[in-house]
Picture 1 (tube, rainbow over the protein chains, first blue to last red):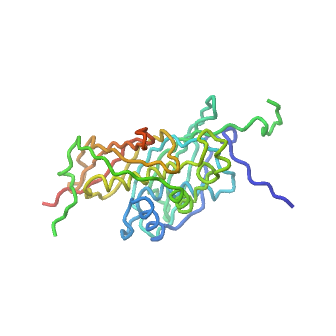
Picture 2 (tube, rainbow over the protein chains, first blue to last red):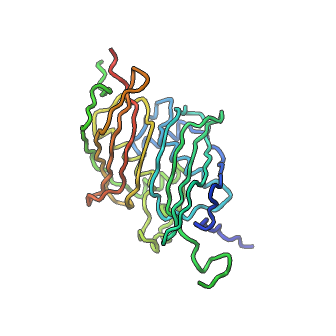
Picture 3 (cartoon, rainbow over the protein chains, first blue to last red):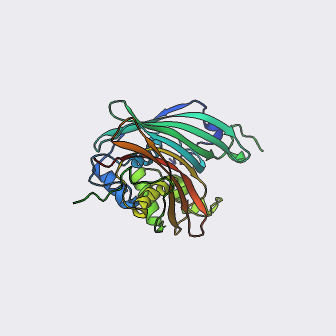
Length: 147
Length: 149
């Protein structure tokens, strides 16, 4: 039996105000050391995780959801606030909500509000991601249209 | 030993820095995909990306953002930073494999906070490639210690 590769999640598939809650990941000393070595940001010996490491990890958490990945054409921007420090050894997950869905000629703009939440349910970081997302190619429309 | 870090009191609005260059390699992108778990085809599928407007794989936007944070520490003597608290950021163009990026940063504001031992420093940042094209830009807010009295 052949199982097809999962399709991508196109602009048309995005549900305005839809909420996604991801699985969790424990932030370890190894994450901090790899991140610090790769980027030069952060201190491998500090008890607190580099703030931007958590932003990076939330993007990967989205890939552990059963829904296919968003067909991102370009990452346009991010606005971000750090509410509290996160200690190495803490466990985070993210919750996101589609706040804006705006059609453009080539694809559409999606603004996603995202929170990073620790194991006690406290929001440690929050902000907004803006993406340019592809429209579903005409040949692949669920309606079977021949446009 | 004297504390060589620069405190809130030492930093002046208008100060500007330029970092050394940093060539972004395929290895950086592969490691970042593994670390973050972001395997988007933009960064990982060379064949798919031949057909895209970029023509090849590009670096994760957040990899560029993280590298500029590292470059900041090489652009100026270390700040006595307690925390990074805010970011307003735009991704203006792709960073491709082999591109060399550098950071231009400038202090645009200093504010007292409710706590007397620290202040807020806003830094405007522009990331340019080897052709001097802006690939990312924005502002960051840092909480910096005041010089101990």
